[in-house]
Amino acid sequence: SQSVHRTDVVIVGAGPVGLFAVFECGMLKMRCHVVDALDMVGGQCTALYPEKPIYDIPAHPAIEAAALIDRLAEQAAPFAPTYHLGQQVEKLTRTDEGRWLVETNKGVQIDAKAVIIAAGCGAFGPNRPPLDGLEGFEGTSVFYMVRRRQDFAGKRVVIAGGGDSAVDWALSLSEVAEKVSLVHRRAKFRAAPESVARLDALAREGKIEMVVPYQLAGLEGADGQLTAVRVATLDGEEKAVPADAMLAFFGLSMNLGPIADWGLNLERSHIAVSLPGCATSAPGIFAIGDIATYPGKLKLILCGFSEAAQAAHAIHPMVHPGEALHFEYSTSKGVPGA
Ligand code: FAD
Image 1 (cartoon, rainbow, N blue to C red):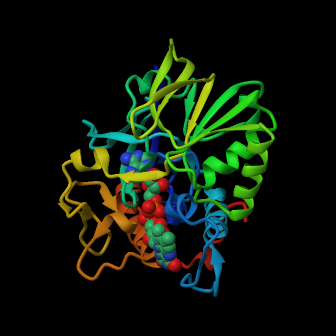
Image 2 (cartoon, rainbow, N blue to C red):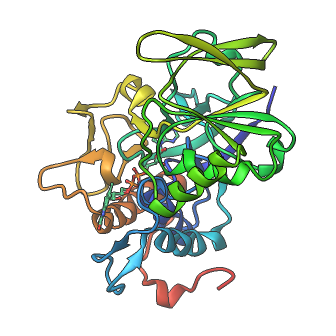
Image 3 (cartoon, helix red, strand yellow):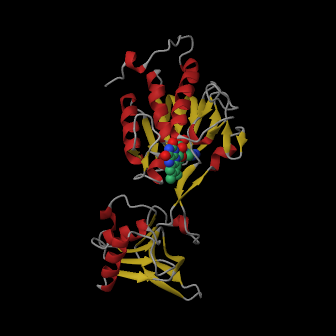
């Protein structure tokens, strides 16, 4: 079993607001651990619109969402946060010491004085196809993202989906895989015209097998190892496509999930907080960013930044009791390592 991490603050969610909370806590000498269901930091900015410019970040007339996240991660870095990515916070338990034990679905346990929930609209996760026995293959031969292209070298890969991710990975993996089969329920793909043209060319050359119009119907194999993917037409006509691995690209969805079970005051899927400080109904638990609600709340990144500062100041006396907090500007303090 893994040991329990001990820290000042656990931040649930590494979106823009969670990242800025690391900075605000850091300025007040509070160490943070950050957990996110996604494999990357950045929340909605990274997962939904990395290349879109944002126009309402103060002092940035325009900044691409991915660039904003890079800058926020850079701003947090001097405070050496520990990131636990690719895992969801499932349980929050009050300890006898009056602290909180945070547990993830990967078995990571973090004991902290305070928790900041910056969970947006809930945990991001892939949309999973409804196939019998799917869990038994996930992570071993069924995947929702490519970590390393080389993992698929020499393999027979079935790719399912009709958007950019499915098409782009079919093109890319056709260079290293033994065989790529692309399954989509329509003959038309929702992807960049240039990519679709390349797909058509590779299909004509026999480098990519087009399995259209078909839907996923089942998985064959044992002990986590796929041998074939069964596909069916809308009329129910089935066939098996031999495969060593399957990649499914059906998009991401957000799920409030376990947050609803933490006994906090919820208002229509948002956590009700009181101002100033963004405290929830549970002592030591704070909520900021899109997940938090109060009268007059605006769901904007810049409001989330301000809430991060408020929560950090509210938490300070819990982490450093008796230590007077003389309000100072960042310019007078300086940032470690900067
Ligand atoms: P999020 O960005 O949603 O991040 C929350 C993170 O928490 C996610 O990564 C999620 O996986 C994680 N999480 C949730 N629950 C758990 C759990 N239990 N365990 C582990 N991790 C968990 N805002 C603006 O201000 N200006 C704009 O121009 C603008 N344009 C936008 C355009 C689009 C297309 C969209 C979709 C949004 C836009 N927004 C804009 C809104 C902005 O992106 C959000 O306000 C912002 O992302 C909220 O940040 P956050 O950190 O609160 O939450």
